[in-house]
Length: 450
Image 1 (spheres, rainbow, N blue to C red):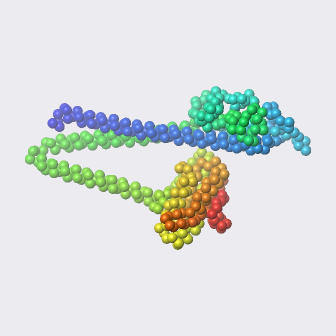
Image 2: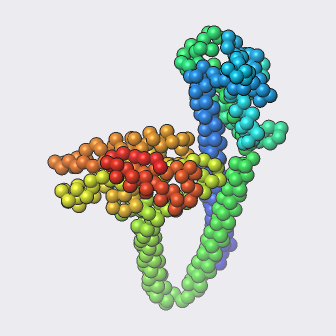
Image 3: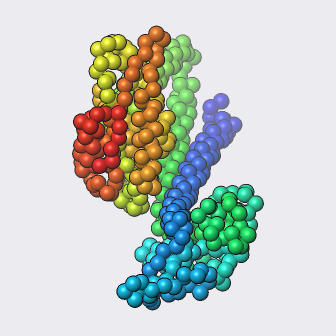
């Protein structure tokens, strides 16, 4: 029967089915990976555009709060013909001609500098522009209309421009209290959308990285799928030949063949169980090597690896991140008073509270004992770091209650910023550690940015 055309056709069908199923599985995995890479690329562009917008928005707010600023009039700062102000142009006591720079004028000058230095174009625009050059293009007009309806708080789109692909980001400018001095004349009210700022970024560097990652995924999964399919093909072919040889054996040997088949089945089952056990053991060993056994947080080895990854990422994309060393105050007293069991529970709760005050993309690690470390990725400025440190201090002074036991402690936090305080892992660790000990000496339960 095994030599019949029907049996051979079934074998060929099985081999073909293996190739088809392997190809479908590979395609689904490749598709998922490609979508993940595309999302990550868009997120990087969004972070870049949003960061530039926030910096410009804060600069404009500072200017508006001061009612405009005066600079020497000259080729780089000519009088603004669209600014209606009784003291637009003045002279200093020593006769220097000064002209007022309002938020809109300042934005245009910053946009010129940004395009020269970074190659990224900033454009302030409005549906009711005072200056013709501020009129929106079709894409900006559509975005402003969406912002007017409060449907979205920002827009990001990949567009094919004449000089190459670009990411276009835009967010609205809302009327704030300092802005009413000028915009109230245009019948704007507090909270109205008075316009927006668009950021046009060259997408080619990001797309080049994305495409390279696409090809790595395609070649990697394609090669793996081919190897798996060939191996399965060989297994099917060899099994078919093996079964054919078994069936040529005399009927008198059927019992022996059955016994051997049973032995093979048992051996295969034991082998599978051993493989499963080994994989489980390897996973446990890997977890113990890189994660803290008590809290499940990354340990010092994993922390060092992620710190170097953060340095590489920040150097490549010219972004900021913060390193915080957190040392628990009075933890020894908790251990001495309530015992190590309660001490372990306190450490677990500390880990949970620390993770609750940072983003999922940040890293919280336990370096040993009562010492923790945090990597805050993609921070905008030190004010954002201040906010996180304040929340952590506040959370850790809250009582730790376990049944009838109530423990109290606090934390001393030392913080280093990249690249302000160092551009190597060793330098940032030394700076954060020194800042943490300075907090200890100053009375504890506080934080300090070096």
